[in-house]
Image (cartoon, rainbow, N blue to C red; front, side, top):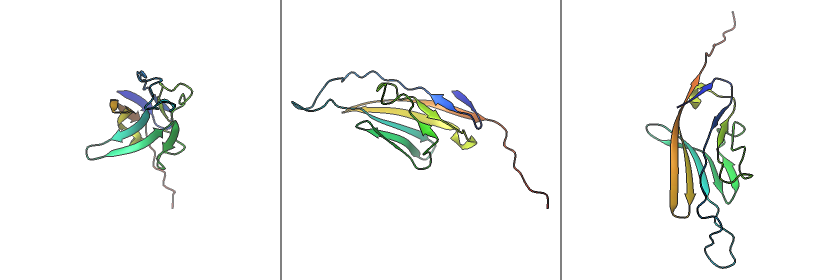
Length: 124
């Protein structure tokens, strides 16, 4: 498991080996680019946080501005996820999934966000 502090940033590493590097589906086509998907899993559902298709990164509106893959696409096999401004609701199981043609690889990690939340109430 990974531990984060409320309000800080957390890096969740994910690397893969590109075994299909330079493989093309037909003559004169560009090489296949793997599809990357980061999700947060709970008992009943999966929340997709981020997806890449053909090198283009799309981030869920709920996480826009708080998550990124800082080394992608500069290092295409490093799809490490960074979460900023951690909230207690960021605790949970995260899955990194790499889909390359019909090949699919994935791994999960549990994240715990620790800290104290002070609820402010004005004196009336």
